[in-house]
Structure formats: structure tokens, C-alpha cells
Length: 113
Image (cartoon, rainbow, N blue to C red):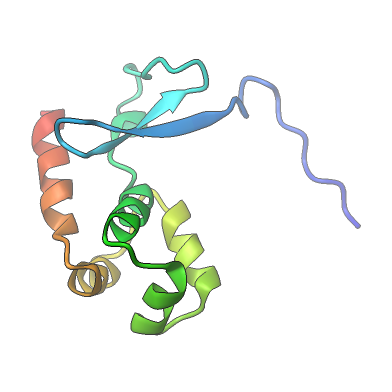
């Protein structure tokens, strides 16, 4: 078995995401809870986390979504990990989950300006 690559401590600092109470947008934060404001890419909406949150909000499971797509649960978890997603998949997810993810992306774009 191959040993995983070792990363420098600075490169692999733990990160987590936070849903903004006003907008519901999910933003990336550092491990100490401070928002990273210098890197615009770090401030962008993480669409995978938003999809996961909306799915849970609707009381649906990964198994349910995988059956609706149709695809494997593994692929659904891969979607959750993605910061960006192709429009056809996002359209399909919007229809299945019943939430306009494009509006969230548009709001995020307006917020960044």
C-alpha cells in the first residue's frame, strides 16, 4: 500500500463551512472560526454543501436522491464535495430537490460585486 503524500501543516489546516443566517449561503471559514476574507475563491458559495443542506432541510436522504438522479450514493457524496458543478446536473438537482440553486449562485455573484 502506497503511503499518502504528506502536506505541509499550512496547506492542510482544517476548514469548515458555515451557513449565513440571513442568506442561507454557505461560506468557508478557517479552523479557528475566522472568515478568510483575502482570497475571493475561498468566499464563494460551496454548491456541494448547499445541496447537502437543502436535501437535509427537505428531510430527504442520500439514498432517495441517488434513486431520483439515478446514480450511486457514492456519486451523490462526490457532488457534496464539489465546490462547483455543471449546469445540467445542477438543473436536475434543482428539479428533484425543489430548490433553485441557480438563484443562490446568482445571489452569491451579486454579493461578491
